[in-house]
Figure 1 (tube, rainbow, N blue to C red):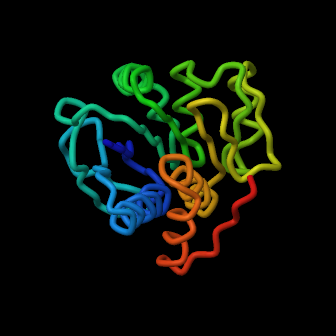
Figure 2 (cartoon, one colour):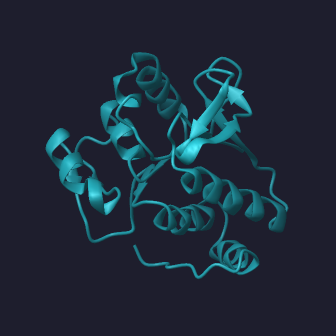
Length: 192
């Protein structure tokens, strides 16, 4: 299974690194055949929040087929204005089995018209903005994550780690998700 995490300039570091740690730890513990990787628009170094440099494993042009697409949050304002990014998200999501977002990654999915009519969430600070900008979404503030069909959206940072453990339970088993949280010495908040 190919799990692609989309990163971009000013992406929140723990949004992608926390997910990567959860999924790669679950892969190791469960003897899974999960290929977890970072994807950026271009094959350049991405400057994540705080100037944290990170190089994706693949670019839009070089990644393998993606079974699970995860779009992380951060300063998303420029990302939603990029036709190439929105088109890529839309195309990859159309063939992915699962699509998830952390924090303001939900804005990018919403801009690609993937969340219309769904109940979604984002970082608490951005709830009102998401609701106002995308009125076809049912935006809730009282959930750490929301799972609807093949889509999962979550609040920011630690909520994204909780959501990714939930994703592990859906892709494999609850037992593997619990083992992963224990291995990471992370207190998993299982309720949404």
